Image 1 (cartoon, rainbow, N blue to C red):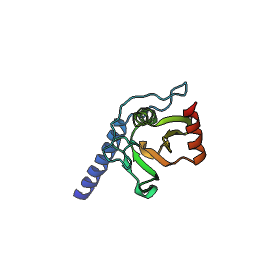
Image 2 (image 1 turned 135 degrees about the vertical axis):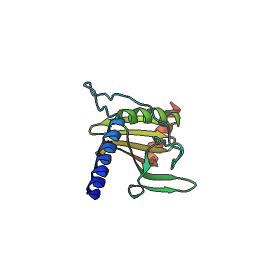
Image 3 (image 1 turned 90 degrees about the vertical axis):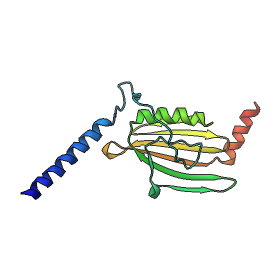
Image 4 (image 1 turned 90 degrees about the horizontal axis):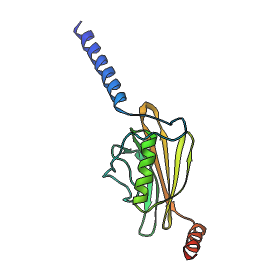
Length: 160
């Protein structure tokens, strides 16, 4: 009988923890007009792979879904982070913090995922935001050099 009470207690505690953690995460989704409702502000994590590509605190690097190459002339990689927050807050976070780091938003695409394309100097950064199971969100940052043609166009535009 003691074992049954212990198992009942563990099961009840697990259900309570799951319920409480689900309630503490605000997941608002899209509003009727297709925009995202922003309900929280996020801080930048202190554990950044590249100091000008911010990641919200509370997100962890998924090493299996990431790779990075860097030398004294170039850097590139795909870094995947997993954490809990709603997409609206993530969109606001990246639009604000990438701009603060000198990145220019070139375009964005929204469907079941959100893709934000940024450029800075001779690099491009694609930020992909998506929902995952259990109220989690996935951030994928893909950083690479721009093509020579893209750099030539940017330099030509600067001269105008």
